[in-house]
Each structure stands twice: as structure tokens, then as C-alpha cells.
Image (cartoon, rainbow, N blue to C red; front, side, top):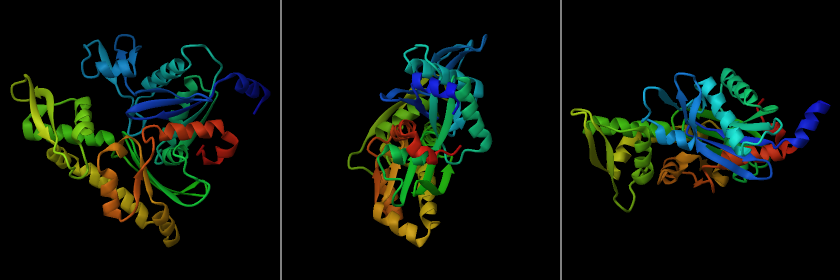
Length: 341
């Protein structure tokens, strides 16, 4: 690093980021997680400037007038709208710094393991345009393992990160990813499956965030002890008027069957494609699931039943990736080898 770079490093507060499809989280050096907000931006169509970002933008999603547009600029874990993503990152970094003007930070960002070179460049360029001095990328399963306290430099581990846009299955050994598969089926596809099910069965159109609430409230991968219902509100597709219907947990399990099956199949494939020695070590250590999707009730039990493996949920599944990226940033000389760029 140049002398000017070292001087900048002394006065900047370096960051780690989980730039997620559903939420963006920022971890600041020596402070921990300082920001956790929805990856949503409301843009003024007339001038292209953001009117609201994060939590405030989420409140406006689906309710904006013609002059405004609400955008989720991340899709399937990667940048779908470069310009809006850059505006969003700039806003979040500024907010994390409490809007103070500080020197350009070094940023470590968690990204899907299946990210393409073009997508990788888009993430790096977007972060640099937002003011980053240096940008390093770490694959989300590796970050999640580090953030959950797994000894990634030691024995073989399997991590399944179920986020908003992607499900990442990876086998880690000796601080490296020895097998990985990135499936673009995760929390968003679960929400979409609920929307389509209710539209097909009840002719009721509901919004994305209503579907997410249904999933969190009564969604499950296996039958639970207590029967639950949810009053879903939306627009009657025949009359065009506001309407509501009551759905059961059994119906939502039916709606979620295909995306859940796709996630279980990813875990199955990962286990079947490992060597006997690796499979033996995973059998001993078990499979860790993390990300927002890991919180779907009964999913850990279903994967365990289907794979005949021990499956457990990470201690802090929603924040394990950003915490891991934060550890990489704070102990960069130790963890630099896990970065993929």
C-alpha cells in the first residue's frame, strides 16, 4: 500500500457490508453492526434523486404516486440497478457515519458464491463510486461461518446461507471453499409463491411485504403443533375492491412446497458430491443453516430428516454474514486469504 493509502487508513473507519437483496447491513470497525435497513430506494422520476432510502422507502413500497418509483435495486443477491444501488450505498455509508464527512474507508462486502465476474465488478465499482478506498469481497457462506464462530481454518464444515435472493450451499475446509452451489431460490421466491397461491386460489392480489408477513407469521416447512391462521389483505381481482381472506398454515406450507424442495435438493447435492473423507467430517460436525430463510419454522428439522444429517441454525442468522465480513475487515492480515478478489 502507498504511503498516502496508509495515512488514509489511519484516519478512516473501515466498514464491512452485507449487501443483501432484502436488507443491507453495515458493520463498523470496533463498533459492530451499526446499520440494518431494507434494500429499498424511492426515486423521484423527474430528477432521478432518492426521496427515501431503507426503512422509510419500505413504508412507501407499492404506495408511491406516479412521480415516484420504489425500487429494490438488488436481485438474486447481486446488483440489478447499478445507479440506484450506488445511491443506496452512499446513503447507508453516510448514515452509518452519522452523516459526518470522513476519509474513504476500506470495505469488505459479502457476496453470493455464484457471483459472475461482471456482477463482481459491479459491486466493487458501486462501492468505490460511493467513496470506498479499497473493496474486498468474501463469499457469503465463508463470511457466515466466520461470523458464527466456526473454525474455518480447521476441520471441514458445511454452511447453507438462505438469504432473500439466493441460497448458498458451501463446504469449507482449511479456510477455503472446496464445494459451492448458488441457487437463486430463497426468501423472495417463497414470498412470490405465497402471492401466486393466494392469487390462484382466492383471486386476491397481495403485496410483497404482506406475503413476507404471512411467511413469518404462519409459514413453516413441516406441520407444527399449533394450527395457525392469518387474515391476508389485498385487492379482489374480480371486483377491484379492497378485500381480505383467512389462510391457514397448511395452505402456506402447500404454497411453499416448491421453493423449500429446491433448497433441500441443494443441500442433498452438496452432500452427494463430496468425497467420503469430507462427508465423514460433515457427518461429525453437522450442517449449519443461516440467513433469514433459516428462521422459517421447521426448516432445520426437514433438512435433517431428508439428509439424515445433524442440522442446526446459526446463533444470529440474520447478521452472521455481516459479522463475518466485519471480522475479516478487523483482522484483515489473518483473513485476507478468504477474500475472492
